[in-house]
Length: 110
Length: 117
Image (cartoon, rainbow over all chains, first blue to last red; front, top):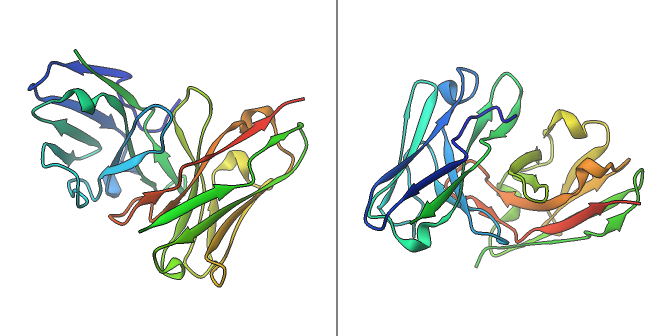
């Protein structure tokens, strides 16, 4: 049972816009910034979004992040086949004093 | 180029010990927090521990407290994870990561630890 709740799966067709949610509480998302990672099978995760909505260099602007209260979202516009991956949200939990991850969302491009 | 290379993974019996290493290159190692994150087979990511730039502060997830110790040697640009009293549930790919929740985040390729008799 993850501290942050993500839908286990999401899907969309090429060109579509999809969003992945990440729900937490006041001790984690509510009080700290959120990062998003993506991970292809058999490879290491990579940073996609940090500080709620900042993209590292090299990440396309099709990817965007947002946060409101105790929830965060990752949006992917202009969906492409190579976006098929696992996506994880993460943040610091000030009560547990640990980094917490969401359970991950498997995105399928139909 | 930023590189993080883990080593030390192995098959170990329950109750055994293992020391993971993470060799850093391509950046000023001593100026970054470092983390260990693990992923059990077919499961999601689980944060394990982190350590401050100078090694003065360390934090652990409850499930490894008292069994795992994170450390670093800034002169050798290396991060370590000493794992004692290993259990089957510690079986995972272990990743070292730089600046995990910030913009300079970078992950190693991971190393497999298998705990089994």
